[in-house]
Image (cartoon, rainbow, N blue to C red; front, side, top):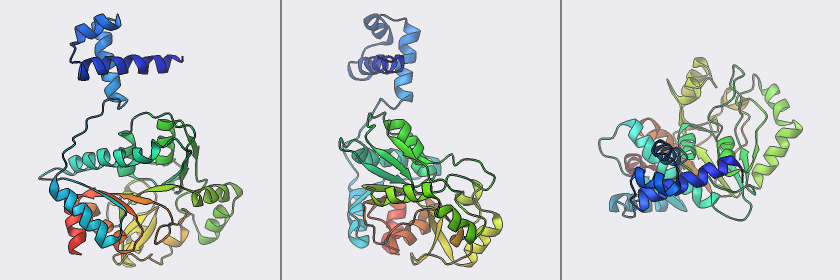
Length: 315
């Protein structure tokens, strides 16, 4: 057995003894025949690798009701709504990440080989960070969004790569920048043999996980170096309020026709979706974006927070 697997096994035993059996770290050290500092590090390692799963079985009735109403209103096959009170944006993001990971695991735990298409973004990346290590090398993880920023750096929110690392599945990178320099260059990228392979594989996907971004000053696409301030201004002038995979969307849920949007190389989504397509977003800054995407019928599933859910029902 590889040493990495031995460490995981030992950490799992230490975590079980600590969290389930209620042993002290001294007792764990004695049972595993290691020193107390090693026992302490093993428990910490188990937490770091998300081997510790805390589940609260009682869900808030309000959130369940909101999820059901959203599903009926926007024709969703699944919806998860997380509770918020006076939480900070960071706390809401954490709750979304935990709920998002649970939704992803429902698919990733499948034994049959799966093709999983994914977008990118901070919420998606945070959700993947919460996923436990899975042995699912039979799955294929396909990125639907260009992995290169304007300065040539790689996309640190490339979720397909991170799910691949979690599952051992094969990762398929979309070989293009998110935004080409011109429409002619976009055509060249999208006609490349490797691009067409990934595009074809995406069409076979069993499920798609996508982030929902807002468009405006200090939006993630700009902060992460994918579009310039001038391009943000152009999208806003064309009434864009949201984006998925970099493709701009207006308040009614329709695609925005703009010179910036026409240079995006991402694999296009379908409306209505031809496969389960689950969006992950919440918080005040994403409210209008989530509502726009719902109105456009781009999703079959959603993970969001209760404030955004209420706003979407009032829209």
